[in-house]
Length: 243
Image (cartoon, rainbow, N blue to C red):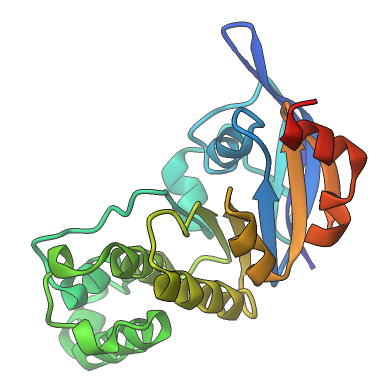
């Protein structure tokens, strides 16, 4: 089922057309990689979907009710079920893994839930920690974690908000080989239940994701399909080789 569609989106910054009549759709569940050279519009695409940037024209269509998200606040879009993970992890380094996950939980704040929900909260925290591979690190301050572990913790904090769509920006950057493998497996597992869009430059990482790829160039879709399919496309080859 289609969960998100960008339809005819365009946006210009100081005379530069960053996004040019961009249209494509994401299914739920699905794992999608978005690639393209610097300046292709990858980050601006995520900014528009999450409400950080308002397009000059076009629509961002969300969910079964085909709601247009353009003009909604970033917080309203997050509450609708769209989570975004930036390239640099933003965790609370002085707090433990447990505390970071607890702060991110989508809570029921009724008095009954506050009084009797502590056990359920801890069970959910342990479940999230297991899902991201940090079940043995719950008591550690986030600042002691490796770069890759901080990335996983931030993904866990996003999952605590129960999103339907996760936008993940360059997750492989700065990771060890083992961390990259764990991250690949985590994203593939999440995509069994969620829509997951990964913006990435590392083609070896994208190949391991083994998913549909959308190639952006000058703010538009240049090609779409498997990684093998798009990398054999003459236009894609010319763009990446600078011809």
